[in-house]
Length: 390
Image (cartoon, rainbow, N blue to C red; front, side, top):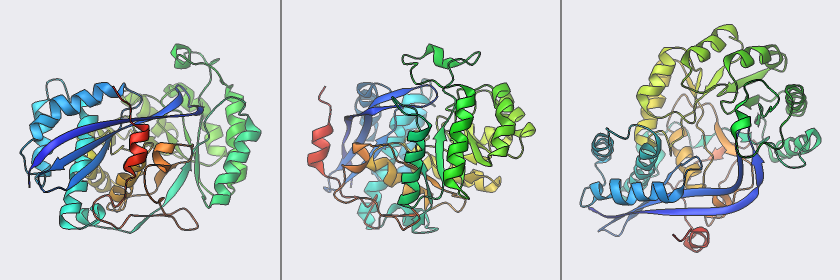
């Protein structure tokens, strides 16, 4: 079996505006990767792009990385990963190059699973066929105040979630706030309003776990100022309080707020970078993104490194159905998985691309798809509907 084609498929759909501490999204997008072989079997993956122009990453995959794979054996996944990584080392290592590599890697594992007739999580060494999840939502938006946030969280509870994460930090009036540099500065709240939002969430979740995410919009001093409120409200983790480059700042937060675990970083990439953060005690809970941090091949190493260091792992997942399926398989193969992110914002690219939905029990523990590879049946008519024509 040899690889005959590598193709990137850019998808986009409209959505109601949602904002985190910095960014605003009114259009969801995904970049799928399809790897074809002379046997007729294909693999599908997703390169996560964090809003980057899809044609740029499509070009990287189809014109730079893809040609290196042609006529190669797709079963040699570790060899191919290193080939792509080292041949782009001078200008790669991170960013969109590693995103493209991640999407390719997911597709290769999907292809291998189909070839040997096993779901990926069993190829990796299954720990469980279910993965606990938390509801990821609580964004800012037009006309969305505390009452609307409460209704949203009540909906999650009725659905079966016991744990949820909300956004905080969209504070334009805060000294040094990077929101002032963003294109959309609407729906900003004060720090006091953010505390009320957390209090509302804490009340609705009752004994469940409340996580908060600032999307790296704070500095370490702001995090320490919020510390007493985070402790009072029994926040289970503080996610990406500051940019991951500020390792000393993360160390300071961890040292002075030992009651609040620091989670991150969805925007970090690669084993060595996560290893450095763990070694410096900058992170308590690891949150790599499989479509960004290096695919199955690199992320399972990040998980193993975290396990050896006594760290829990909770995968970031904010993409399409392909991304969520890959995240489920990886999470189910790692013994230190705590929970997986289950995005609850409306996203047709997650809910409308497969012939059947993902299944979960009454507490929103997701069942890992049991068919070959990623185990999902894509509706290619729907994929064509969302495909962007360049």
